[in-house]
Image 1 (tube, rainbow, N blue to C red):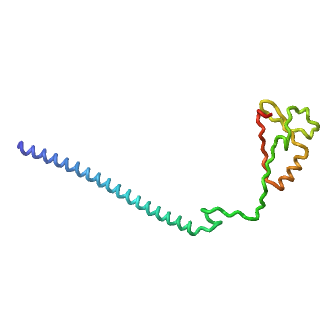
Image 2 (cartoon, helix red, strand yellow; image 1 turned 120 degrees about the vertical axis):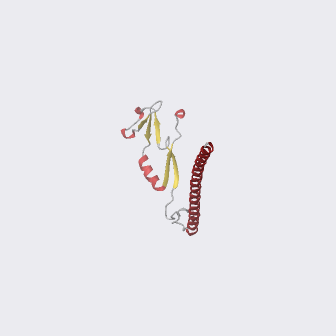
Image 3 (tube, rainbow, N blue to C red; image 1 turned 180 degrees about the vertical axis):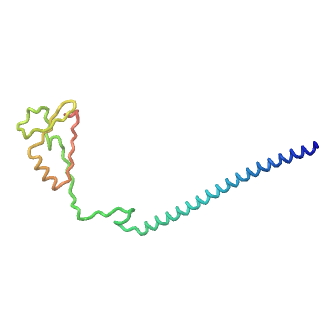
Length: 151
């Protein structure tokens, strides 16, 4: 009887081990299926990339100037090209005054520029008419080198 109970225990342990082994096998199968699915997805993506590269190559081969995304549009030759004229704001177009009392006429009144001290920017006489004519002939850039230390 003792041998029979030992035998039953051994059989029960073997059954338990068999169940555990079957569970591990099933888990490995799931892992294997997952790996195979990933490989399939990678292969599909690789094929998509090859197709995409072929399409891009075909686009490059068939590209026509003016309609292609890969080449710049040609510049029309009938665009008038103006030379660039650079004018200095300080001394040429305007004069800088420290006091508003030096203005001779009300139309000369400029506008104050605030900084560490107030200075007045006064347009020179005829500036508006001058700029109208110059803008017809040139691309105008207005600049100034005026900084605090040279005021």
